[in-house]
Amino acid sequence: MNAVDNGGCTPLFWAVYAGRPECATVLLAAGAAVNHRDTNGRTPLDYALAQYEEDDESTAAARAEVAVLLEAAGGLEEADLSDDDDDDNEDDSDDEDA
Image (cartoon, rainbow, N blue to C red; front, side, top):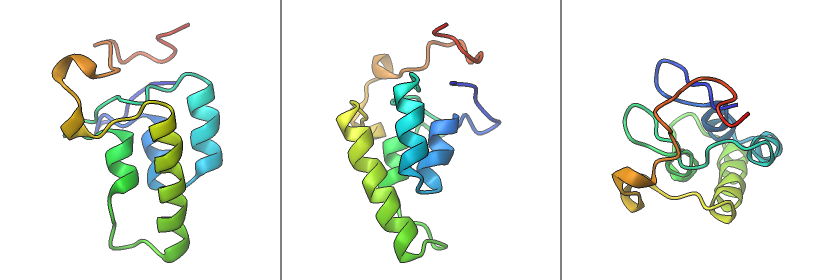
């Protein structure tokens, strides 16, 4: 669930970036780490609030919908997290909550 790629991104980051609220909902319900940070310190909410050159209107609107979901689940922006708030438990193994 919280496996990371080379950039420190979990599946939740990719659902957010792609503007897929239905995927983000499933991942959050399954226990995805809402405040995990990538290798640059960004959280899924940071990704949801960012604007990307390649975005079209529908992707940007979907990402805004995902931002609402993340905030409701306790998601924070990088700037609002202290070092102790990171959901990453220093164990990037898959299914770390199982």
